[in-house]
Image (cartoon, rainbow, N blue to C red; front, side, top):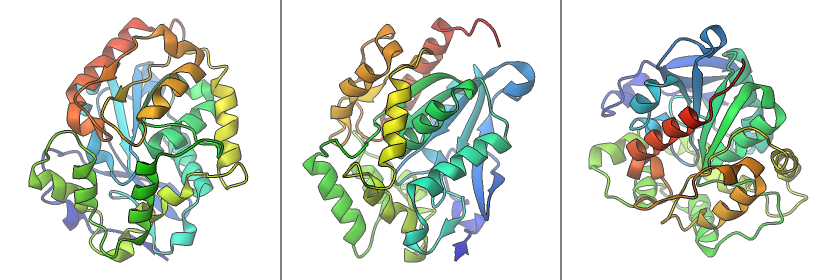
Length: 304
């Protein structure tokens, strides 16, 4: 069963006055917000595609969007099961391929090109895979606190504890989950904004299933897709800027291997975001956005 949220759930969300828009991705409706310049397909402007992960939504990028919008078009979708997007009530409907196909359809329907991909957590697993499959649409990569698990990796004890808690907690408080993944304390209205898309248990299947979709074996669903993406990104020739938070216990160990995987990543500054944790967009959004704009400015695309 497909379920849809009432817009009333988002009336009290602070500092996020963007009009929601929607794209049909099969039987589901995928929500997004955007700001900035004209469509890149018409003007040749930069397009920033910003992808969130578990268990957030486009609200996570609100501190970054105004800075990026000064440089180009900014498109920020909600993954299926999150934010304003439709969701399945049945957890079995959530698969790596469902999420990937929805993102691929979203990008195709909006005819996005000249993309600088800004991605974190599951937004990286899905976005980097799409970039590897359709490099013609992407100019640059900015992976943040993410990775491409192909089933051969070792997951940290922190991650296993997190995955177990998300799967089994009787009352999954998404706001507290996000707050605990930040370096800085969050105001209560912001914590409530992360709770807004999840009024009751019927709406949390996407959040509950994401950790379990991370491949733990090369035979698991999704492992081959991510392994193929790794192979293609090992030959990536366009600019890439790996930007991780120093205080993320879940993904910090992925940073150097990812930076070593993508050949062009070593051409960019070797930096960490010091005072930030897993949700670095919350902790240091403006700083990160400025670093990304600088990255775009120093890696101009010669011809489009």
